Length: 310
Image (cartoon, rainbow, N blue to C red; front, side, top):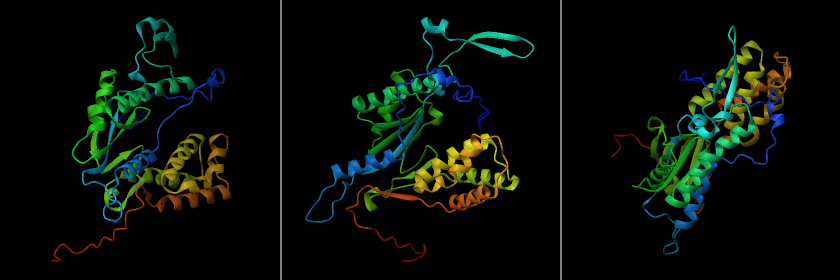
């Protein structure tokens, strides 16, 4: 059950060993938040001008901004072709009623191949948007990102939305956000407003992400117990949080989280508890990461004064 009370079936098939019967010849290609910095650095290299021997500067019309969109209902955005429905019948056991059979509208859950298959759809849409609509777009499954470089035109997001509309998966209007210099994507706060002046893009965890991790660690430390489910979730959150901010620091408690994720003893040992205490301190003091995308620009010194200063 998700935060909005929407029920979503998710199972990677590992505990039931279903994946042991799946032979994969394909892997998943998605993006990270560093995509924004990589594109911005490429734009800065191509658009910078060196006039009169001064430091290269960007044209006045360059404003790096980010917009986001969400495809409709993830897996369920891929309906099964009518000719294939006879192959999409699943058996469900209902207590006191027995086995019932029903058509599955969408890709089957619980198999590794289903995740790979679903990712092909947004990747195809992004490839079309880039080549046919000149969109600086990217996708992390059903979460789409549009980068804009022109101050007063949202060409990337317009192109991306048009492509997915024509593909039959029009992004959800209520989950679409116009490009701005501050945007959340994949649990990360990204700021691009300092690119023209300072030549940097700043990334940091969302406040809600940090608060969630701290609350989970506090609960674990107060009970001195770390369940398998909590260890798995915390391991994912920690890896993501420190990947965007502090490099490999999040691996500090990796052995503890792995041991409890795949073990049967939830009780924390003294050394494990100490590792989680240090990890909590590191999370609480995590600092933003500034990624240089135009290192030739001079460092700007900002002086803030009182509003009444004349």
